[in-house]
Amino acid sequence: MNMSLPVSLSPTTAALDVEQSLDIESASGAKTLVIACGALARELIAVIRLNGLIHLSVTCLPAIWHNTPDKITEGVRAKIIANREQYERILCLYGDCGTGGTLDAMLKEEGVERIDGNHCYAFFAGLPEFDAMMEEEIGSFFLTDYLARFFDRLIIDGLKLDIHPELRDMIFGHYKRIVYLAQTDDAELRVAAQRAADRLGLELVVRYTGYGNLIPFLNKAS
Image 1 (cartoon, one colour):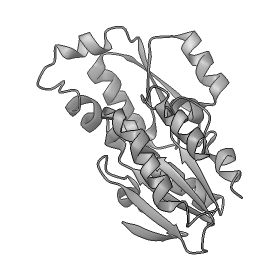
Image 2: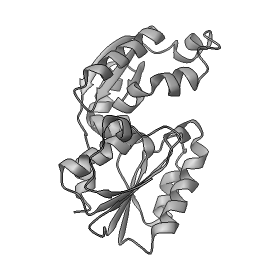
Image 3: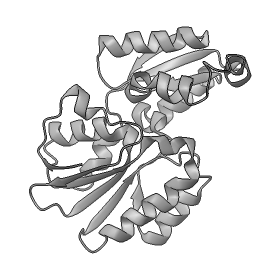
Image 4: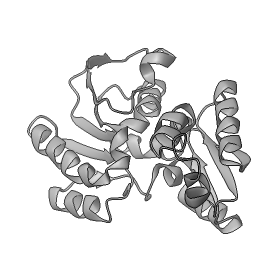
């Protein structure tokens, strides 16, 4: 899927499917490429549009790769190699995301900067704020707008909890609450987050973060 920025996306088209990749080329002849997780596509496009960062191009890898994180490092490397000659600068919008440090090691080799934080929860909430939430309750399971939207597909279906309901307590038994880190003030997503908490038998806490550290990170490319 190729588009030109600035782009106006409907809620349907902006919610990238978990198995899709996405390429968005800037209409202005961008000099910077952002390689991102597909779970961040909607928020990334919103930040670019709201802040007029139309000099950026974006390429997203499938969000479903979080279930197979061994694919992430080499997938990102392939994007770097394929685009190095076209762009003056490449940024990586991923956390470690279960790669066990291999992503950071590869990015260091390739000279590509990654946003600070081991996962999107940290860079949405802010690193000190995320650490404080974990100190407050270590048994916290986090949702973002994306995860609230795709909870059934990624968690219920992905972990086969409908087929094997006994797995719920095995996997989530040590959690005490769901913390929904909301990027937008969306009533439907709050309902979805509450439904997710109910399905896991957990308390719901909602914290509004907005786009967190995405904005200052992307502004580095200005």
